[in-house]
Image (cartoon, rainbow, N blue to C red; front, side, top):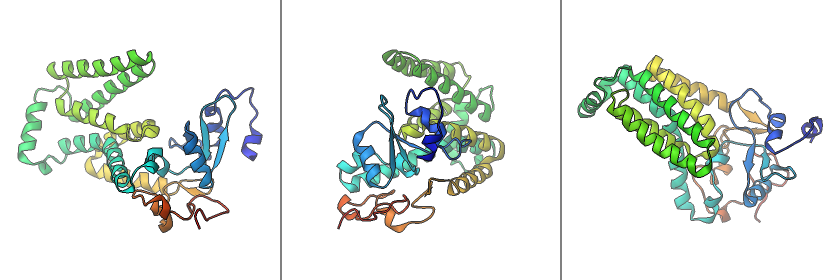
Length: 288
């Protein structure tokens, strides 16, 4: 309430205008405020002890505090069997790791650790990359840049034209570049896989895109050691991240046993009897 009261601006066009005023760490690239257009999600977050901020005329509701686990969850998770949802959430985590690390691992193995690749697989890679004028590192950066340009172009075009441009452009440019010998087919496939994996967590695409570039640079310059060190630094940074009294990586760092019922592995809703301990709230009991 104090932060909102301090806002002095000529107009609030949309809820997004408030984000920069409410973020505690303004220099961080990581998302610190929850956003939703669905009433059931907004109400569910309020029932867990969060604050919802609604701006007149805007369909977006902001919720605070925010923990990264929220983007791993989906409203449909609570309308289906918990066994299936647990598997789906594991797949989302795997997709997220692939989207960040796969290009960096590919470049690092090709440049520094090619002996760990099975012989038949190594022969296939050598055959597909033979004659490419770029090093694996520069080739991967070129492909990432190519797909990022296509993505930005598709966003700023009319909806149906943008879909056509992104699909046709990726197919035509990728196929033409491979046939011309500028890039290899494994590089195109890896970037395509990471691009698809982004959308298992659509709210985190901008952050994942930056992290993919960072880990590709680390893999190309320092090899697998750089990826390990970069991963440890990232986790260390996120562990120390705290917004409005909620640890960013809760309930795993710090470890909160009772909150694990709706974390990576989901339990039946009837078994979740208390509100999340990681979210500051006065009434802990959800079900008696």
